[in-house]
Length: 183
Image 1 (cartoon, rainbow, N blue to C red):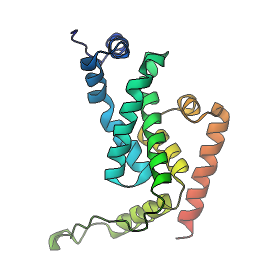
Image 2 (spheres, rainbow, N blue to C red):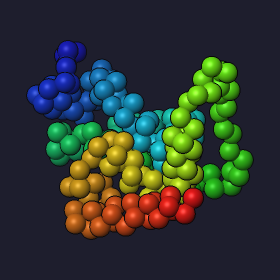
Image 3 (cartoon, helix red, strand yellow):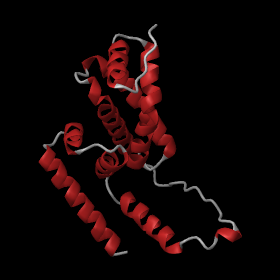
């Protein structure tokens, strides 16, 4: 068993190569390095922490099976977060019957009532606007703004050209702005 640090490019390539060959320890290092990013993206897509964690577990299963086919180890992170987004979208399609959504409620202490109510209202407006988007649109936003993928990485993840991806993202952001202006 080789000790692999995946903080550098050589370590990442080595971890991917070892994991693709069946090394569970190397795969565990990859999981440790990328699980949180994948969970954040999945959560933005499905808006449910339990479903997001389930989607990420499925994504890891897919990644384990497909890892030997990854041609560019340096593209591991974008590849993994795209898999997580896809799994979250698929789970959302399968869970369309769900009509009740539990919302966590944290009562605010009396001394915290001076919190910026305008900022809180703006955050709620944005959350509601995001909730009105399709899981595919939320996935695109999550891959761009949560995972930080650039237009080229996004285009590979969603199967469009970089310019088509930028155009779709621009239209999506314009829709969000318009939705927020009418609140």
